[in-house]
Image (cartoon, rainbow, N blue to C red; front, side, top):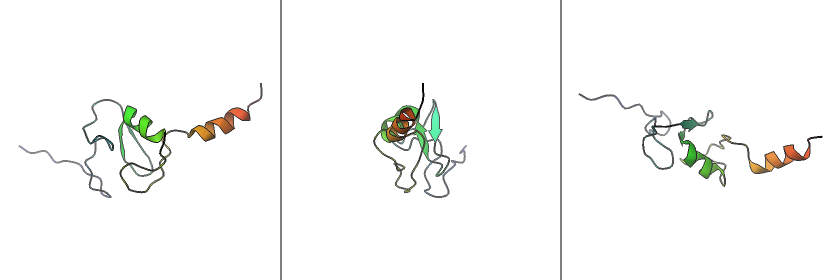
Length: 80
């Protein structure tokens, strides 16, 4: 008995697999609404701490998490 494996139409990667470690995601799965790629929350946090583009090589500039420079700009404009 075989079950159909869902794959991404663009990159042919298996859906539900982490875009960094390539293992199945059994916990919290996060994904980019722009390109649809995603993976383990911890792996995404680590990757996007120093990178802006999708780790799959699709070239999309994912914005899953706000950049530190954007956060600093917002903090400086707040009034107390």
